Image (cartoon, rainbow, N blue to C red):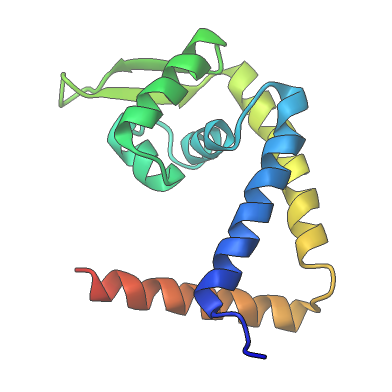
Length: 142
C-alpha cells in the first residue's frame, strides 16, 4: 500500500476546510470568498478588484460578483481610486467590520479543530513547511 501523494493530501485538506468554512459562514449569509475579501480589506483597506481577487484566490470576474454582493449588503463601499480613476477601491463599512469579526471567530474555531492533534511546535513547523512549499512553487513558476 502506497502513501497518498502530498499534493493529494493538501487538496483533501483544502476541500474539507472549504466545505466546513462554507457551512460555518452560511448562517451569517456569507461565503468563504466573501469572508476572504472582507478579511483582505480589513488588513489593507482600499484594495482594487484585481488585488482582492489575488488575495482571495478567485478570478477577477468572480471578485466582481463578490464585491457587488458585499456592496449591496452594505458591507463594503467602493469609490474611484485617487490616482487611477478607472480603478475602484473598496473599504469595509462598520457593518462589514462586524461581519468579518463574526466570520473570524467561526474560521478560527474550524482551524483549531483541524490542528487539535498538533502541539504548538508541530503547528509552527507545519506552517513553516507549507510556506516553504508555496514559495518553492512560486519561484518555479516565475
